[in-house]
Image (cartoon, rainbow, N blue to C red; front, side):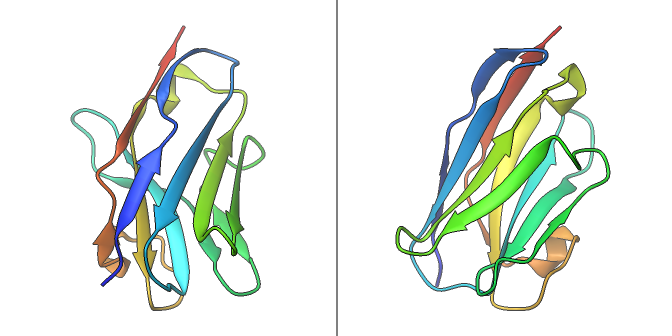
Length: 120
């Protein structure tokens, strides 16, 4: 069983930056970030392979967001720069013992979510 705890959300103006953190209690193979805006489905943001660090991004955040991990702290990060109002959502950390997936069903472990609000 893997437990995840996100932190770092908040309110920021358009063009600003935030860094999200996700602390994991157990070992995983892939970890990812998803987000869900009101009235919309949960969507993939980024994922990273725990061993090797290979990363994947949604086209909408490529070049603005950076996913990383600290193996010693067992923590994943999402550095979000040049934020836009359309980035406003609840951001969820997810983990899997399987290979990378951009689908929520590919991740059995989820955090509670952290709100990110970008004002225009």
